[in-house]
Amino acid sequence: MLIVGGTVVDVDGERRADVRIGDDGRIAEVGADLPARNGETVHDASGKYVIPGGVDAHTHLHLELGAVSVSDDVASGTAAAACGGTTTVIEYVTANRGQRPLDALAIWRSKVEGAAIDYGFHMTFTEAITEGDVADCVEEGITSFKLYMAYPDSLQVDDGVIVDVLKATGKHGGLVTIHAENGSAISSLQREALLAGRTGVIEHSRTRPAILEGEATARAALLAEMVGAPIYIVHLSSAPALAAVRAAQERGVDVRAETCPQYLHLDTVDLERLDGENFVCTPPLRDSWHREELWEGLGRGWLHTVATDHCPFWMHDRRIGTMGRPEGWENFTEIPGGLPGIETRLTLVWAGVRAGHISIADWVRLCAEAPARTFGLWPRKGALRPGFDADVVVWDPNREQALDADALHMRTDHSPYAGQVAIGWPSLVMLRGKVVADDGRFVGQTGWGRYQARDQVFHAP
Ligand code: MN
Image 1: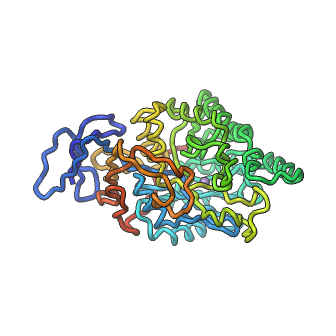
Image 2 (image 1 turned 90 degrees about the horizontal axis):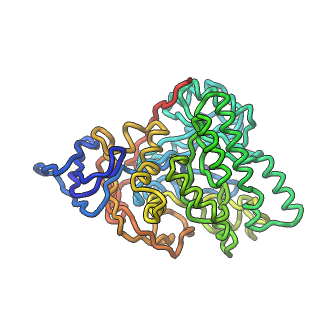
Image 3 (image 1 turned 30 degrees about the horizontal axis):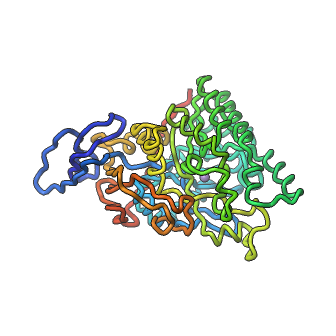
């Protein structure tokens, strides 16, 4: 295929150029006025942008939370991702306490046969591990790891484990990603709220204040600085956490950070709606002024990526909660946390281009190039250079897309953006040279996605 007449935007700049896709599923040529060859399909991208396929570095397509599970599976979630312009996801595997990481990986691998787009895995450790565990994962192409500083009952590790894992992964060229909230302090606030009879949705936010995200982010960066290893903060949601990232960066620490569309577009007002339980995610939505700070962080380069933390639930499952109560959850700690978003990431970040918060080049970097580089998918994903995988999005800046649940492809009955119409949507999406979304419809196949063993991108100092 030859994509002609569009404006190409990637690491090499913004320019009028045609893009030739080779029979091997890679980019063959990018240049001005390429002549079509015999038998080549020509796609007219006039008036549109041609960009590398999106890389979503944070998804949950298989996850059980107590009595409930995420409503998407790998087939439905990856098809939705394709429709929105994302062609690679990195899914979080969790090795629960007492479970060997490779056993957890085997479970996730068995779930992904229906992937419609390419995928990789991060590995989450929930207790002390050995350097051998890290080496085993790196051998499998898993070069990034996750640690939680929150959820003491199930996921949280202490600072000693963080230091151990930073050292072990540093030796193997891996990257530690961190859920940065002070879990013990949050537990104290939760006990206090429940004792006082404060059980409603808004308490989810009040018991997880931004200052505790700031504290944990600063602590994580200090531990990384001490060890001399890089660190990546997932789903950064607030100004204090952003300030901690900036302070560490100014000291020369290699701390990178991700935010998510929900923190750029939603706020605590949504939690006070009648259907507020459907807006519960962690970290929680913040007061609206944090959103301006996050947009500035994206534009200035203090925040590096936008990922979704895609984690949808049926409204019924929200209501019965993690305890599975037919009469409904008893207090806010039982509400399963997470929002749908795998399909709407590119357009919700594009909204920042339209509003003047970030440039078009920033948009491509945040949604494709930076996650590809950070997580060892470069030089295969994240740009339209010859030899890269032909993951290509033709982006129509004027195309309108309703954001209601039934207008989208994610398997969920609730959209946080219901009633809104996005402006800017893919008109064509290709995965390694094959069309997977065309004119807003999914035309790919489950099973087309390939596992992406990821490279080591960091080395011990
Ligand atoms: Mn997550």
